[in-house]
Image (cartoon, rainbow, N blue to C red; front, side):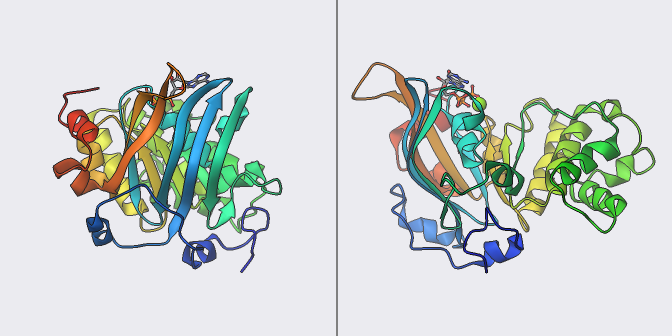
Length: 298
Ligand SMILES: Nc1ncnc2c1ncn2[C@@H]1O[C@H](COP(=O)(O)OP(=O)(O)OP(=O)(O)O)[C@@H](O)[C@H]1O
Ligand SMILES: [Mg+2]
């Protein structure tokens, strides 16, 4: 297998199965964490900080994200959840004047190393945003766009489009109108189209930043079912303000909060704890988590 999965082309499934490197220290978690199937870590995050100019938005975050699991990221507004997940596919560096400190290993490889291609990173680690954002193109072209610009040459683009729409649980609803504008779809269908678009470039990880916050409960339910299906093949990290959603879909939950750092007066996002979702919601290890999930704070 390639030693450098982000710079060389190789089968992503090989990367998923690769023996992970020696584990780095994680934030303290309960011994119960072992109850969650111990899949290989996909991301190993060590002392991650992120700066917008001089402002440190998140501080010293250390945690693992495990393969074929759904990891939920929860916490009050402004605690750095979006900042954190955007670090995982180097989206943040598109914002001028920003800086990352610490380290993120992706399958044991430094994600921010000089020889890592950020475009390849964003193909391997796809993202779905809060508001569905289809391109002003047909349903078909929305899905075919990514493979085309990434130079993927599928044997049949029609098959790839169909397969991606099927995987996103949208095919049955659109199969007779794939040449119609993506804007003709409902909000929930548009979000599934965005998931299909993400899947079409064969990513390994899907990052989702509040993917259901613009959707009604039925469409939300559909996306949640889809996520549970997708985790068989993908690693998913989801930011959500919806506690029930985190509890329903995720295997592990990371609780972030914003606190005043020792060195200044600014509020900086920190990871309070990461644990099995069930544990976080029934017996969290930290008072701050308990206050948040019981609605006493945030
Ligand atoms: N582009 C930016 N430039 C400067 N500061 C930013 C930028 N984006 C976010 N921030 C700041 O970084 C901090 C964390 O923001 P972030 O959007 O990551 O929080 P969040 O937890 O996702 O919040 P929400 O739940 O409201 O989406 C906030 O103080 C925010 O004002
Ligand atoms: Mg956010």
